[in-house]
Image (cartoon, rainbow, N blue to C red):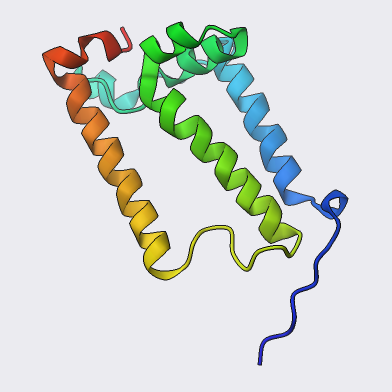
Length: 138
């Protein structure tokens, strides 16, 4: 028998604000160039990975330049930033007892994960094509 969920007030959260604050600090450090993390995949192969240009895209978003951010890494802007926001919101709901889990269970969770992997691989492939020239991080 499972125990009933206890719904806690929003101000009782501890993990979600820490993750959001830490993510914001890391994003600011990477986006402003204070911390530079070279792409090991690009260093080894000379090919952009799906995340190349993501730090510069975050920096552009912090400055409010959406067009430049999309130019550096459209995938980060269109998929990863909204995904991070949705996951943080779901984690907050889970932490306060308003949801049973922070990631969908069963088929829905697997479908979400597979979709994310397929979209990432598709972006990586598109980025290497001549039509994806505008989306290259260099």
